Image (tube, rainbow, N blue to C red; front, side, top):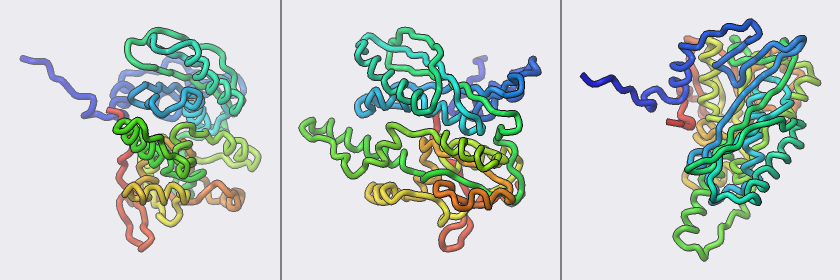
Length: 342
């Protein structure tokens, strides 16, 4: 009798995480939060430390035919710092580990670290260690980010409650649209190497894909305005997917409004040019690394005039489900169709 074989794709990324987490037993009281949020939370005297790790794999997360190495170094730090910010914590340190093949020169690694150092400067974090090893395939980058906050400042995914207001920072959908443009120009170049990429009118969307910026600035501003989000996460897998995570962790439902979703004109116009639905790009694009969070209604007045925080909907009872209300007033059930890793 053959052994049962379950494909990883049957579980998906989050199903796999849940499966692995079933056997994890927390033994130390200093571990305040383990697997299941944007970062782990560890007791550290009067403060708490948050810790998060992300892998970037060549051919899966980036394509060196159009991703400049300094941009890639910056992005590797930014996506981890974003997870620290998603806990409403301030990043302080990172470690960087790389695996590389002999096709990379010292100069190439210097270019990668140029971006890493630029990100450290930008976010005010220290590079404190890491590891280097050989790779038989492509480039692998693993970054661990460490941040800190007071215990009462931490925002988990699980704190959203009925009537809270759903907020997002910045604008959404640009990273997905930028990826489509880069892939299109790559195909044009492969078909005819004489053709030079024409990216002049796509600067915002390509930059959002190649060099996203974690919203640590918003964390500092929330501190100044004395607002602690009731729940929070960053938008790495698409707005719809992240709404599902908050609803699942908090045991709630949500309603958002199409006419409240922030999308830049360049993102909108480029999506239309590519025959993509702009709202689908906003809902399912991912990699924008903006923040999705909920606030108590009493905090609305503090954030109401903030130019880069948008109020897109509200939290409801779990049994009321998760809906997008279109511009025509139709309520459409939200489906999470973000990035699938397996």
